[in-house]
Each structure stands twice: as C-alpha cells, then as structure tokens.
Length: 74
Image 1: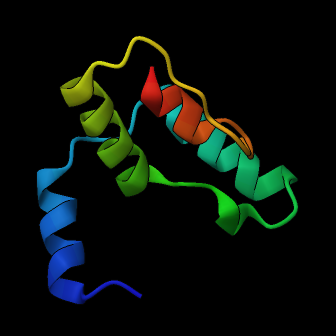
Image 2: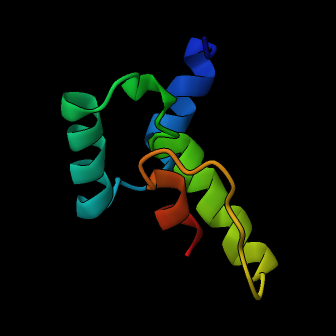
C-alpha cells in the first residue's frame, strides 16, 4: 500500500523497534484474530514522535487493540 521509495526511506531512517514492541507484535500475530489491525512499527514511531513533540499532559486512547500504539504514546 505504501510507495516503495517511501518504505525504503522509512526503513533507513526509523530507529529499531523496542524489544517490548517486537514481542507484542509477535504475540499479536500469533494469538489474536485480525492481527493486521495492529498499528505497527512505523505508525507507532510516528505517534511517539508526535507525542514527544507536543508533550501532552494526558493522553486518552479510545479503541485500544492490543496496546501497541498506547505503549508508543507514553
């Protein structure tokens, strides 16, 4: 779904996924129905960056799936 050039750029400029997020990703894909609903590494990295830039006092996430994006927001 993503342009190959954009995907390659993201691959080379996004830091590696943390151990806890890798584990959650694996667990979601092996044990949960419809694992593609997981936010994933690049979306999580974007959420983390936005959260660090904005520095909100509180974050309310509605509709948490397995918690991947919630972990990225803290």
